[in-house]
Length: 480
Image (cartoon, rainbow, N blue to C red; front, side):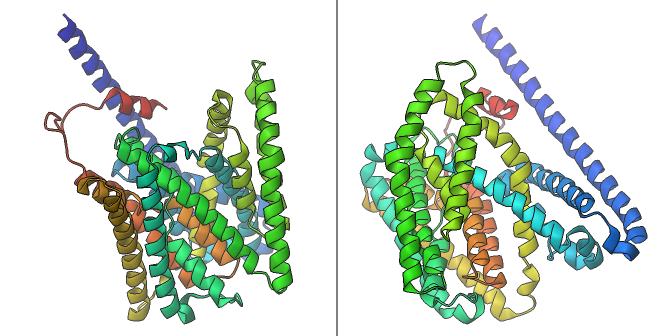
Protein backbone atom coordinates (compact mmCIF):
# COMPACT_ATOMS: atom_id res chain seq x y z
CA UNK A 1 0.00 0.00 0.00
CA UNK A 2 2.82 2.38 0.89
CA UNK A 3 4.44 1.73 -2.48
CA UNK A 4 1.16 2.49 -4.24
CA UNK A 5 0.79 5.73 -2.30
CA UNK A 6 4.35 6.72 -3.21
CA UNK A 7 3.70 5.89 -6.87
CA UNK A 8 0.51 7.95 -6.78
CA UNK A 9 2.34 10.86 -5.11
CA UNK A 10 5.09 10.63 -7.71
CA UNK A 11 2.50 10.60 -10.50
CA UNK A 12 0.76 13.65 -9.05
CA UNK A 13 4.12 15.48 -8.70
CA UNK A 14 5.02 14.63 -12.29
CA UNK A 15 1.60 15.80 -13.50
CA UNK A 16 2.01 19.04 -11.53
CA UNK A 17 5.50 19.52 -12.95
CA UNK A 18 4.27 19.02 -16.52
CA UNK A 19 1.51 21.50 -15.76
CA UNK A 20 4.09 24.05 -14.61
CA UNK A 21 6.17 23.42 -17.73
CA UNK A 22 3.08 23.85 -19.90
CA UNK A 23 2.22 27.05 -18.07
CA UNK A 24 5.72 28.42 -18.61
CA UNK A 25 5.53 27.57 -22.33
CA UNK A 26 2.17 29.34 -22.55
CA UNK A 27 3.60 32.40 -20.82
CA UNK A 28 6.54 32.46 -23.24
CA UNK A 29 4.20 32.19 -26.23
CA UNK A 30 1.91 34.94 -24.92
CA UNK A 31 4.88 37.14 -24.07
CA UNK A 32 6.40 36.62 -27.50
CA UNK A 33 3.09 37.48 -29.16
CA UNK A 34 2.77 40.65 -27.06
CA UNK A 35 6.32 41.66 -27.95
CA UNK A 36 5.64 41.09 -31.64
CA UNK A 37 2.41 43.10 -31.46
CA UNK A 38 4.22 45.87 -29.61
CA UNK A 39 6.96 46.03 -32.23
CA UNK A 40 4.37 46.10 -35.04
CA UNK A 41 2.46 48.90 -33.31
CA UNK A 42 5.66 50.87 -32.77
CA UNK A 43 6.61 50.24 -36.39
CA UNK A 44 3.26 51.61 -37.56
CA UNK A 45 3.42 54.64 -35.28
CA UNK A 46 7.05 55.58 -35.84
CA UNK A 47 6.78 56.68 -39.49
CA UNK A 48 4.02 59.13 -38.53
CA UNK A 49 5.83 60.70 -35.64
CA UNK A 50 9.47 60.71 -36.71
CA UNK A 51 8.90 63.90 -38.70
CA UNK A 52 7.90 65.69 -35.52
CA UNK A 53 10.27 64.15 -32.97
CA UNK A 54 10.75 67.38 -31.04
CA UNK A 55 7.09 67.39 -29.96
CA UNK A 56 6.94 63.78 -28.72
CA UNK A 57 6.38 63.48 -25.00
CA UNK A 58 9.58 62.02 -23.43
CA UNK A 59 7.46 60.38 -20.71
CA UNK A 60 5.60 58.32 -23.31
CA UNK A 61 8.85 57.14 -24.85
CA UNK A 62 10.27 56.35 -21.41
CA UNK A 63 7.24 54.20 -20.56
CA UNK A 64 7.35 52.44 -23.94
CA UNK A 65 11.07 51.78 -23.47
CA UNK A 66 10.48 50.40 -19.98
CA UNK A 67 7.75 48.07 -21.19
CA UNK A 68 9.93 46.82 -24.05
CA UNK A 69 12.96 46.31 -21.78
CA UNK A 70 11.11 44.40 -19.07
CA UNK A 71 9.27 42.17 -21.54
CA UNK A 72 12.26 41.41 -23.76
CA UNK A 73 14.66 40.76 -20.87
CA UNK A 74 12.29 38.34 -19.18
CA UNK A 75 11.43 36.57 -22.43
CA UNK A 76 15.13 36.07 -23.10
CA UNK A 77 15.64 34.99 -19.50
CA UNK A 78 12.85 32.41 -19.78
CA UNK A 79 14.27 31.11 -23.04
CA UNK A 80 17.75 30.68 -21.55
CA UNK A 81 16.33 28.92 -18.50
CA UNK A 82 14.67 26.45 -20.87
CA UNK A 83 18.15 25.79 -22.26
CA UNK A 84 19.54 25.10 -18.79
CA UNK A 85 21.25 28.48 -18.33
CA UNK A 86 20.79 31.02 -15.52
CA UNK A 87 18.02 33.45 -16.44
CA UNK A 88 20.39 36.37 -15.90
CA UNK A 89 22.25 35.38 -19.10
CA UNK A 90 19.09 35.90 -21.16
CA UNK A 91 18.29 39.16 -19.39
CA UNK A 92 21.76 40.50 -20.18
CA UNK A 93 21.41 39.35 -23.79
CA UNK A 94 18.05 41.14 -23.92
CA UNK A 95 19.81 44.35 -22.96
CA UNK A 96 22.48 43.80 -25.61
CA UNK A 97 19.79 43.19 -28.26
CA UNK A 98 18.37 46.65 -27.52
CA UNK A 99 21.78 48.30 -27.81
CA UNK A 100 23.88 49.35 -30.80
CA UNK A 101 25.05 45.76 -31.37
CA UNK A 102 21.65 44.54 -32.66
CA UNK A 103 18.77 47.05 -32.55
CA UNK A 104 21.02 49.97 -33.47
CA UNK A 105 22.65 48.02 -36.28
CA UNK A 106 19.36 46.80 -37.78
CA UNK A 107 17.28 49.95 -37.27
CA UNK A 108 19.34 53.00 -36.27
CA UNK A 109 16.38 55.38 -36.62
CA UNK A 110 14.14 53.25 -34.44
CA UNK A 111 16.78 52.99 -31.72
CA UNK A 112 17.39 56.75 -31.85
CA UNK A 113 13.66 57.37 -31.42
CA UNK A 114 13.22 54.79 -28.67
CA UNK A 115 16.32 55.78 -26.69
CA UNK A 116 16.97 59.53 -27.03
CA UNK A 117 19.39 61.06 -24.49
CA UNK A 118 16.65 62.14 -22.07
CA UNK A 119 15.10 58.64 -22.02
CA UNK A 120 18.52 57.01 -21.55
CA UNK A 121 19.22 59.39 -18.66
CA UNK A 122 15.90 58.50 -17.00
CA UNK A 123 16.54 54.77 -17.49
CA UNK A 124 20.00 55.13 -15.96
CA UNK A 125 18.49 56.84 -12.90
CA UNK A 126 15.98 54.03 -12.44
CA UNK A 127 18.72 51.46 -13.03
CA UNK A 128 20.81 53.05 -10.27
CA UNK A 129 17.91 52.56 -7.87
CA UNK A 130 17.77 48.91 -8.90
CA UNK A 131 21.50 48.52 -8.39
CA UNK A 132 21.36 50.18 -4.97
CA UNK A 133 18.55 47.86 -3.85
CA UNK A 134 20.27 44.80 -5.30
CA UNK A 135 23.57 45.56 -3.57
CA UNK A 136 21.73 46.21 -0.30
CA UNK A 137 20.11 42.77 -0.56
CA UNK A 138 23.49 41.22 -1.41
CA UNK A 139 24.99 42.81 1.70
CA UNK A 140 22.13 41.47 3.82
CA UNK A 141 22.61 37.96 2.47
CA UNK A 142 26.41 37.89 2.81
CA UNK A 143 27.17 35.18 5.38
CA UNK A 144 30.76 34.29 6.26
CA UNK A 145 30.21 32.30 9.46
CA UNK A 146 31.00 29.06 7.59
CA UNK A 147 34.57 30.34 7.20
CA UNK A 148 35.31 29.18 10.76
CA UNK A 149 34.32 25.60 9.92
CA UNK A 150 36.27 25.31 6.66
CA UNK A 151 38.79 28.05 7.36
CA UNK A 152 41.80 26.28 5.80
CA UNK A 153 40.08 25.49 2.50
CA UNK A 154 38.32 28.87 2.35
CA UNK A 155 41.53 30.76 3.15
CA UNK A 156 43.52 28.98 0.45
CA UNK A 157 40.75 29.36 -2.14
CA UNK A 158 40.26 33.07 -1.44
CA UNK A 159 43.99 33.79 -1.79
CA UNK A 160 44.49 31.61 -4.85
CA UNK A 161 41.22 32.63 -6.50
CA UNK A 162 42.05 36.33 -6.21
CA UNK A 163 45.85 36.60 -6.54
CA UNK A 164 46.45 34.61 -9.74
CA UNK A 165 43.56 36.14 -11.76
CA UNK A 166 44.48 39.58 -10.45
CA UNK A 167 48.09 39.15 -11.61
CA UNK A 168 46.91 37.83 -14.99
CA UNK A 169 44.48 40.73 -15.42
CA UNK A 170 47.15 43.29 -14.59
CA UNK A 171 49.56 41.67 -17.07
CA UNK A 172 46.97 41.84 -19.87
CA UNK A 173 46.05 45.40 -18.90
CA UNK A 174 49.68 46.50 -19.21
CA UNK A 175 49.91 45.15 -22.76
CA UNK A 176 46.49 46.49 -23.81
CA UNK A 177 46.53 49.86 -22.04
CA UNK A 178 46.50 51.96 -25.24
CA UNK A 179 43.39 50.05 -26.43
CA UNK A 180 41.33 49.51 -23.26
CA UNK A 181 42.20 52.35 -20.89
CA UNK A 182 39.87 55.30 -20.38
CA UNK A 183 40.87 58.95 -19.98
CA UNK A 184 41.43 58.67 -16.20
CA UNK A 185 44.81 60.24 -15.45
CA UNK A 186 46.04 57.48 -13.11
CA UNK A 187 47.40 54.54 -15.13
CA UNK A 188 48.03 52.53 -11.95
CA UNK A 189 44.32 52.81 -11.13
CA UNK A 190 43.45 51.37 -14.54
CA UNK A 191 45.85 48.45 -14.11
CA UNK A 192 44.59 47.59 -10.63
CA UNK A 193 40.97 47.97 -11.71
CA UNK A 194 41.35 45.60 -14.64
CA UNK A 195 43.06 43.02 -12.45
CA UNK A 196 40.24 43.35 -9.94
CA UNK A 197 37.57 42.98 -12.66
CA UNK A 198 39.17 39.77 -13.95
CA UNK A 199 39.30 38.23 -10.46
CA UNK A 200 35.58 38.78 -9.64
CA UNK A 201 33.18 35.94 -8.76
CA UNK A 202 29.41 36.54 -8.94
CA UNK A 203 27.98 35.55 -5.56
CA UNK A 204 24.23 35.73 -6.47
CA UNK A 205 24.48 33.65 -9.66
CA UNK A 206 26.84 31.20 -7.95
CA UNK A 207 24.31 30.68 -5.15
CA UNK A 208 21.58 29.95 -7.71
CA UNK A 209 23.76 27.41 -9.55
CA UNK A 210 24.61 25.63 -6.28
CA UNK A 211 20.91 25.30 -5.43
CA UNK A 212 20.11 24.00 -8.92
CA UNK A 213 22.85 21.36 -8.61
CA UNK A 214 21.86 20.52 -4.99
CA UNK A 215 25.35 21.43 -3.76
CA UNK A 216 24.37 24.27 -1.43
CA UNK A 217 24.32 22.00 1.66
CA UNK A 218 27.46 20.01 0.80
CA UNK A 219 31.02 20.87 1.78
CA UNK A 220 31.91 21.85 -1.80
CA UNK A 221 28.99 24.29 -2.00
CA UNK A 222 29.69 25.77 1.43
CA UNK A 223 33.38 26.35 0.60
CA UNK A 224 32.50 27.87 -2.79
CA UNK A 225 29.82 30.19 -1.43
CA UNK A 226 31.87 31.29 1.59
CA UNK A 227 34.97 31.89 -0.54
CA UNK A 228 32.94 33.92 -3.03
CA UNK A 229 31.39 35.98 -0.22
CA UNK A 230 34.78 36.84 1.31
CA UNK A 231 36.28 37.50 -2.14
CA UNK A 232 33.40 39.86 -2.95
CA UNK A 233 33.95 41.72 0.32
CA UNK A 234 37.66 42.12 -0.48
CA UNK A 235 36.84 43.19 -4.05
CA UNK A 236 34.42 45.91 -2.93
CA UNK A 237 36.89 47.17 -0.34
CA UNK A 238 39.62 47.36 -2.99
CA UNK A 239 37.23 49.03 -5.42
CA UNK A 240 36.41 51.66 -2.79
CA UNK A 241 40.08 52.57 -2.52
CA UNK A 242 40.48 52.61 -6.31
CA UNK A 243 37.50 54.92 -6.80
CA UNK A 244 38.91 57.25 -4.18
CA UNK A 245 42.15 57.29 -6.16
CA UNK A 246 40.40 58.41 -9.39
CA UNK A 247 39.79 61.90 -8.03
CA UNK A 248 41.41 64.69 -9.99
CA UNK A 249 42.01 66.94 -7.01
CA UNK A 250 45.41 65.50 -6.14
CA UNK A 251 46.69 63.55 -3.18
CA UNK A 252 44.80 65.70 -0.69
CA UNK A 253 41.44 64.84 -2.20
CA UNK A 254 42.30 61.13 -2.28
CA UNK A 255 43.24 61.19 1.40
CA UNK A 256 40.04 63.07 2.21
CA UNK A 257 37.88 60.56 0.32
CA UNK A 258 39.58 57.56 1.94
CA UNK A 259 39.26 59.21 5.36
CA UNK A 260 35.56 59.89 4.87
CA UNK A 261 35.00 56.32 3.66
CA UNK A 262 36.81 54.94 6.71
CA UNK A 263 34.78 57.20 9.00
CA UNK A 264 31.54 56.07 7.38
CA UNK A 265 32.55 52.42 7.80
CA UNK A 266 33.40 52.98 11.47
CA UNK A 267 30.05 54.72 11.97
CA UNK A 268 28.25 51.72 10.48
CA UNK A 269 30.12 49.23 12.67
CA UNK A 270 29.94 51.20 15.93
CA UNK A 271 26.55 52.90 15.66
CA UNK A 272 24.34 51.64 12.83
CA UNK A 273 24.76 47.91 13.40
CA UNK A 274 23.90 47.91 17.14
CA UNK A 275 21.05 50.36 16.52
CA UNK A 276 19.55 48.12 13.85
CA UNK A 277 19.89 45.11 16.17
CA UNK A 278 17.95 46.97 18.88
CA UNK A 279 15.30 48.15 16.41
CA UNK A 280 14.90 44.62 15.11
CA UNK A 281 14.41 43.20 18.60
CA UNK A 282 11.86 45.91 19.40
CA UNK A 283 9.79 45.70 16.21
CA UNK A 284 9.57 41.90 16.15
CA UNK A 285 7.09 42.17 19.04
CA UNK A 286 4.49 43.40 16.56
CA UNK A 287 2.72 41.32 13.93
CA UNK A 288 3.37 43.91 11.22
CA UNK A 289 7.13 44.09 11.88
CA UNK A 290 8.01 43.81 8.20
CA UNK A 291 5.81 46.81 7.34
CA UNK A 292 7.65 48.85 9.97
CA UNK A 293 11.14 47.73 9.01
CA UNK A 294 10.86 47.72 5.19
CA UNK A 295 10.73 51.51 4.72
CA UNK A 296 13.38 51.99 7.42
CA UNK A 297 15.89 49.59 5.87
CA UNK A 298 15.25 50.69 2.29
CA UNK A 299 15.54 54.37 3.23
CA UNK A 300 18.75 53.63 5.10
CA UNK A 301 20.24 51.84 2.10
CA UNK A 302 19.34 54.72 -0.23
CA UNK A 303 20.66 57.31 2.25
CA UNK A 304 23.99 55.51 2.59
CA UNK A 305 24.17 55.18 -1.19
CA UNK A 306 23.74 58.96 -1.44
CA UNK A 307 26.38 59.47 1.26
CA UNK A 308 29.03 57.44 -0.55
CA UNK A 309 28.18 59.19 -3.81
CA UNK A 310 28.64 62.59 -2.15
CA UNK A 311 32.10 61.68 -0.85
CA UNK A 312 33.20 60.57 -4.33
CA UNK A 313 32.47 56.82 -4.32
CA UNK A 314 29.87 54.80 -6.22
CA UNK A 315 26.40 54.63 -4.59
CA UNK A 316 26.35 50.82 -4.57
CA UNK A 317 29.18 50.78 -2.03
CA UNK A 318 27.07 52.62 0.52
CA UNK A 319 24.08 50.35 -0.05
CA UNK A 320 26.28 47.25 0.28
CA UNK A 321 27.85 48.61 3.46
CA UNK A 322 24.45 49.31 5.01
CA UNK A 323 23.31 45.79 4.05
CA UNK A 324 26.29 44.33 5.92
CA UNK A 325 25.07 46.10 9.06
CA UNK A 326 21.65 44.42 9.02
CA UNK A 327 21.42 41.59 11.61
CA UNK A 328 21.48 38.04 10.22
CA UNK A 329 19.32 35.02 10.96
CA UNK A 330 16.12 37.02 11.28
CA UNK A 331 12.85 35.79 9.79
CA UNK A 332 11.62 39.38 9.46
CA UNK A 333 14.71 40.46 7.50
CA UNK A 334 14.37 37.38 5.27
CA UNK A 335 10.76 38.32 4.56
CA UNK A 336 11.75 41.91 3.75
CA UNK A 337 14.43 40.73 1.33
CA UNK A 338 11.86 38.56 -0.43
CA UNK A 339 9.51 41.53 -0.75
CA UNK A 340 12.26 43.70 -2.24
CA UNK A 341 13.50 40.88 -4.44
CA UNK A 342 10.33 40.68 -6.54
CA UNK A 343 10.15 44.26 -7.82
CA UNK A 344 13.93 44.69 -7.97
CA UNK A 345 14.58 41.57 -10.05
CA UNK A 346 11.45 41.81 -12.20
CA UNK A 347 11.57 45.52 -13.05
CA UNK A 348 14.62 47.45 -11.88
CA UNK A 349 17.48 45.06 -12.71
CA UNK A 350 16.33 44.63 -16.35
CA UNK A 351 16.74 48.40 -16.66
CA UNK A 352 20.34 47.97 -15.53
CA UNK A 353 20.86 45.17 -18.07
CA UNK A 354 19.40 47.43 -20.75
CA UNK A 355 21.83 50.15 -19.69
CA UNK A 356 24.67 47.66 -20.01
CA UNK A 357 23.40 46.69 -23.45
CA UNK A 358 23.09 50.30 -24.57
CA UNK A 359 26.76 50.82 -23.61
CA UNK A 360 27.97 47.52 -25.11
CA UNK A 361 28.98 47.70 -28.74
CA UNK A 362 30.20 44.39 -30.11
CA UNK A 363 30.74 46.28 -33.34
CA UNK A 364 33.79 47.90 -31.70
CA UNK A 365 35.53 44.56 -32.11
CA UNK A 366 34.58 44.90 -35.78
CA UNK A 367 36.67 43.13 -38.36
CA UNK A 368 39.91 43.95 -36.56
CA UNK A 369 41.83 40.71 -35.88
CA UNK A 370 43.78 42.56 -33.17
CA UNK A 371 40.61 43.39 -31.21
CA UNK A 372 39.24 39.86 -31.46
CA UNK A 373 42.64 38.46 -30.48
CA UNK A 374 42.71 40.79 -27.48
CA UNK A 375 39.24 39.66 -26.43
CA UNK A 376 40.31 36.03 -26.77
CA UNK A 377 43.41 36.65 -24.66
CA UNK A 378 41.41 38.39 -21.90
CA UNK A 379 38.85 35.58 -21.88
CA UNK A 380 41.53 32.88 -21.81
CA UNK A 381 43.47 34.60 -19.02
CA UNK A 382 40.29 35.14 -16.99
CA UNK A 383 39.23 31.48 -17.24
CA UNK A 384 42.62 29.79 -16.89
CA UNK A 385 43.96 31.90 -14.02
CA UNK A 386 40.72 31.69 -12.03
CA UNK A 387 40.48 27.94 -12.57
CA UNK A 388 44.15 27.24 -11.86
CA UNK A 389 44.31 29.56 -8.85
CA UNK A 390 41.17 28.14 -7.24
CA UNK A 391 41.70 24.46 -8.07
CA UNK A 392 45.38 24.57 -7.17
CA UNK A 393 44.65 26.26 -3.85
CA UNK A 394 41.93 23.71 -3.10
CA UNK A 395 44.36 20.85 -3.71
CA UNK A 396 46.94 22.49 -1.43
CA UNK A 397 44.24 22.71 1.24
CA UNK A 398 43.72 18.94 1.00
CA UNK A 399 40.50 18.80 -1.03
CA UNK A 400 40.05 15.84 -3.44
CA UNK A 401 40.96 16.38 -7.08
CA UNK A 402 37.35 16.06 -8.26
CA UNK A 403 36.15 18.69 -5.78
CA UNK A 404 39.04 20.99 -6.66
CA UNK A 405 38.14 20.68 -10.34
CA UNK A 406 34.50 21.56 -9.70
CA UNK A 407 35.43 24.39 -7.33
CA UNK A 408 37.62 25.95 -10.00
CA UNK A 409 34.67 25.77 -12.39
CA UNK A 410 32.25 27.32 -9.90
CA UNK A 411 34.49 30.26 -9.03
CA UNK A 412 34.76 31.18 -12.72
CA UNK A 413 31.15 32.40 -12.61
CA UNK A 414 31.21 36.22 -12.90
CA UNK A 415 27.64 37.23 -13.75
CA UNK A 416 25.99 40.41 -12.48
CA UNK A 417 28.87 41.36 -10.15
CA UNK A 418 31.25 41.66 -13.09
CA UNK A 419 28.72 43.83 -14.94
CA UNK A 420 28.38 46.14 -11.94
CA UNK A 421 32.15 46.49 -11.62
CA UNK A 422 32.56 47.05 -15.38
CA UNK A 423 29.81 49.68 -15.35
CA UNK A 424 31.52 51.50 -12.49
CA UNK A 425 34.79 51.43 -14.42
CA UNK A 426 33.12 52.89 -17.53
CA UNK A 427 31.29 55.60 -15.57
CA UNK A 428 34.50 56.51 -13.73
CA UNK A 429 36.36 56.64 -17.09
CA UNK A 430 38.87 54.03 -15.92
CA UNK A 431 38.16 51.90 -19.01
CA UNK A 432 36.78 52.88 -22.39
CA UNK A 433 33.81 51.44 -24.26
CA UNK A 434 35.90 48.68 -25.86
CA UNK A 435 37.25 47.64 -22.46
CA UNK A 436 33.71 47.65 -21.10
CA UNK A 437 32.46 45.49 -24.00
CA UNK A 438 35.28 42.98 -23.48
CA UNK A 439 34.46 42.64 -19.76
CA UNK A 440 30.74 42.24 -20.48
CA UNK A 441 31.41 39.44 -22.98
CA UNK A 442 33.80 37.74 -20.54
CA UNK A 443 31.09 37.89 -17.85
CA UNK A 444 28.53 36.39 -20.23
CA UNK A 445 30.69 33.53 -21.47
CA UNK A 446 32.16 32.53 -18.09
CA UNK A 447 28.70 32.56 -16.48
CA UNK A 448 27.09 30.62 -19.33
CA UNK A 449 29.73 27.86 -19.21
CA UNK A 450 29.64 27.35 -15.43
CA UNK A 451 26.43 25.31 -15.26
CA UNK A 452 27.15 22.94 -18.19
CA UNK A 453 30.73 22.32 -17.04
CA UNK A 454 29.55 21.57 -13.50
CA UNK A 455 27.03 19.06 -14.82
CA UNK A 456 29.82 17.52 -16.88
CA UNK A 457 32.26 17.30 -13.96
CA UNK A 458 29.72 16.19 -11.35
CA UNK A 459 29.53 12.38 -11.13
CA UNK A 460 26.00 11.02 -11.34
CA UNK A 461 25.02 8.58 -8.56
CA UNK A 462 24.82 5.00 -9.74
CA UNK A 463 21.16 4.63 -8.71
CA UNK A 464 20.02 7.87 -10.33
CA UNK A 465 18.10 7.57 -13.58
CA UNK A 466 18.46 10.68 -15.77
CA UNK A 467 14.88 10.12 -16.95
CA UNK A 468 13.44 10.25 -13.43
CA UNK A 469 10.74 12.75 -12.71
CA UNK A 470 11.76 15.98 -10.91
CA UNK A 471 12.15 15.99 -7.16
CA UNK A 472 9.84 17.69 -4.71
CA UNK A 473 12.52 20.35 -4.19
CA UNK A 474 12.60 21.17 -7.91
CA UNK A 475 8.80 21.40 -7.97
CA UNK A 476 8.89 23.70 -4.95
CA UNK A 477 11.43 25.90 -6.74
CA UNK A 478 9.09 26.14 -9.73
CA UNK A 479 6.17 27.15 -7.54
CA UNK A 480 8.19 29.83 -5.80
